[in-house]
Length: 135
Image 1: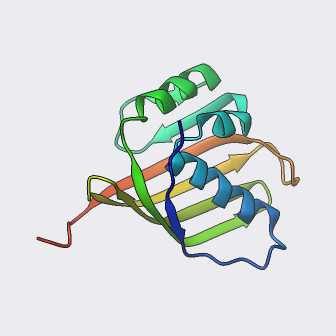
Image 2 (image 1 turned 90 degrees about the horizontal axis):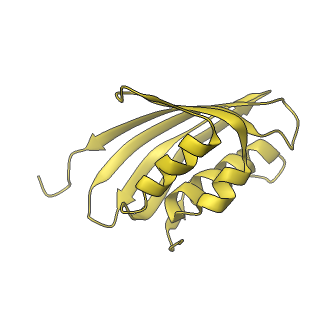
């Protein structure tokens, strides 16, 4: 089930398909659109979450991880940068949770090719809790 998220930052001229793709992919994560996310990755996708001991390998394990994340609701997603070149890409910014917690994030992506219709085969994620503004 998806929900609405306020998305800000990174305006694009529309001439960078992978930037638009990464923006949509991250928005799908924020809104909980697992079906969209799973349609964009390879069957043997690898997801490394820095600081976690296990590496998520394969679409089935990836789907289970997405399912376990449904309790965490994002209310805002701000992009500082989205960078792409060839078969690689990166996005970073800030995530605001409905609980009020904020996180800085950076995801590094590896695609199956440099083509417009390439699918995602690897993700490395960095997620850092930020101090609350009330502290």
